[in-house]
Image (cartoon, rainbow, N blue to C red):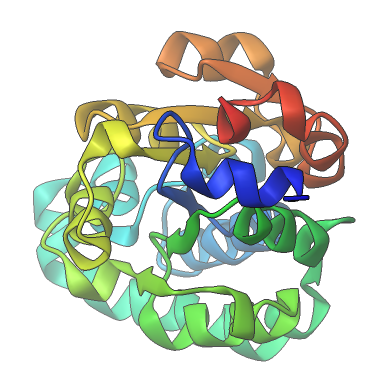
Length: 233
């Protein structure tokens, strides 16, 4: 007698890939990133509060910095500020990052259902490799793409399109999971249905308005409701 998962692997309606964001989706890191950006902005003379910075998390530096800095300021110290932010985050805040509950179990459930797993993040490549270790999912991820692999970070679709190319699947064959409106907009532009999670701190209404088809509190809730989610459609 075949298991349910064996049947699932033969079902052409099941997604071929699940594409996860990591910051705020699998790891509790959004506030820490916001702190690092806030501190960087203030250090370089820009009056940007923590909540203002937090509202832009989900974007890479190529999108976040122009939101706050003029073109002249970007040319003058944008690159230096982003480097300072990266060093600050790695030295002060990366050691504090922890995974949300249920993360490895959710990814194992996805694999058992027959889908490949990818991580598509606006983080830098060196940060992303460390994140996979913190989340305990290095051996569960088939493909990764970071902001270093593309010209534009989220909410541009480049990161998701690069992941689809690496996976060898079309957008309609994948499901994305993310926590920010930028994730939702990027996935939608790449024609990927996206499930939102609230653990990154953005509201359900903002996620749905940006394109999320379903919204769950976090990875553990998505795992508990797996059979009703897009991951098991």
